[in-house]
Length: 191
Ligand SMILES: [Zn+2]
Image 1: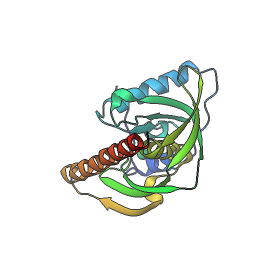
Image 2 (image 1 turned 180 degrees about the vertical axis):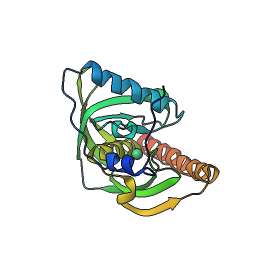
Image 3 (image 1 turned 30 degrees about the vertical axis):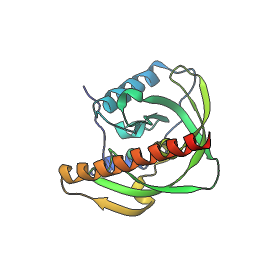
Image 4 (image 1 turned 90 degrees about the vertical axis):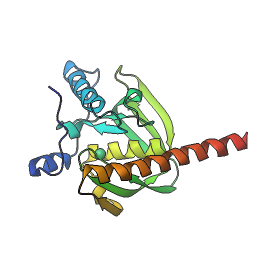
């Protein structure tokens, strides 16, 4: 059965989403692999998705899945993810969340972060993330701390229909593509 993504509309689910998640022990157990499989199933069913955290399927464990392209075939599994901000530079941007239906929140995030996490093979990865990738990682990491985007927003947009929500999503996606394109162009110019 497809794992259900829980939302803030149900009071018990909201309480679960507000909890801090527990670390995963290594080496990875069959229970952990079962959680990863369930998360993969849930995110793939969404078609397009930038990320998902284990608490969103009702499990308070420190596992996140991120896709820095927004395409579900590009997902990466991250276990016990941590980060430190590379500089104090912040960037504002619109975010959506499967657990907060029909809502967009404008959230300030660190522009560049240094991240560390374990892969599904138990290998440790350390790297730097920028822009949209850094935003997705911070959003998903926040889920593990019990923090939701609506609690740290400077502006909130709520829609009454799926259609209105999707129209705004198209605008957000276009802006993201433009900024990715611009960062490409400016990088190319520097060479
Ligand atoms: Zn979310």
